Image (cartoon, rainbow, N blue to C red):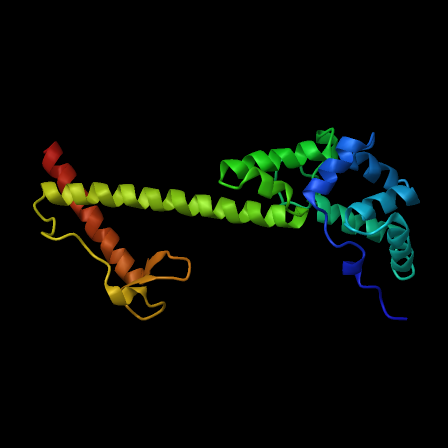
Length: 229
């Protein structure tokens, strides 16, 4: 008998579906999971229904029965919990297995709203967030976090370069013309000293970057020496 494709057990969990469920039912997602952990078949099917938008409860129950021919009940529950709550290790409110500790929140919506607030502060639209799946939410969170880090690093580099040019001006070593990016630098991986990659980020070789930084640092040191005597 061929093994059951676990990807068929659930399609994905939409954040809006989870939010709507908790707003219209006396149950929460955490209540469903707690009962499912006690081998409540119908609670397990309710969770699977949330993960299969467009299917009926009868279709989901049939899907679950097919899954149980090759896998165990706990296998199904683990798949759902990983899809719903998997986060990076060492994150806040996470159990030892890397899953979010649901006991820290009264509603799953409360947890996801926390993510929403964080991502909105990084530029994601509020309505866009609730149309994401749980998997997309974690991917978007990581991407926005990395973009924020890159932007901060660029700003710090710009501030450092500005200070260096000021130092060069006081030291009488500032070029008469501002530095410019050559037109051929816009060709990706063209071997030019300064390049712009697929993401629009300016790049150069390690040796050229080190030389540039050394020159800037020398100018700053010369400026400080001149000012401080």
